[in-house]
Length: 156
Image 1: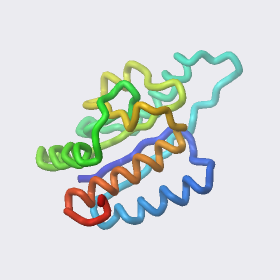
Image 2: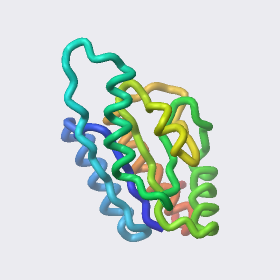
Image 3: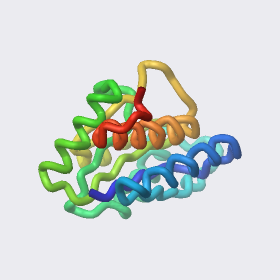
Image 4: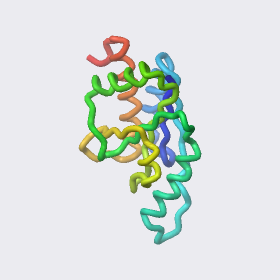
């Protein structure tokens, strides 16, 4: 299974970028993993959150294929333990999902069109993290899930 992680806006903190690169490198031993950065849409002063979400949705939707299994990282989604997240990935693999796309949206969340397209939602925590920190946390959890599925010692 190929996993793509779509994010809105560049990661500007070097320490987060370094951590993300470490886990991306580790993931290559398990799965095909790509991170796709969508530039944040240009906004003018006074642009409403709804307009921002709509513009982001257009950019996100352009990068989705009909057969992609889309999972939104969303604070309204269910929370999983690391083991449960690994089990979710295993179920998707067993079901023959070829392309799984996780999406981390912008600061105003997702447009209703993106919610309609999604197959699932997932919350990383009840706590609030910056969108840049979410990228590192998700990439680490994806790596952790792969080690759980292979019964490797990293998880302990």
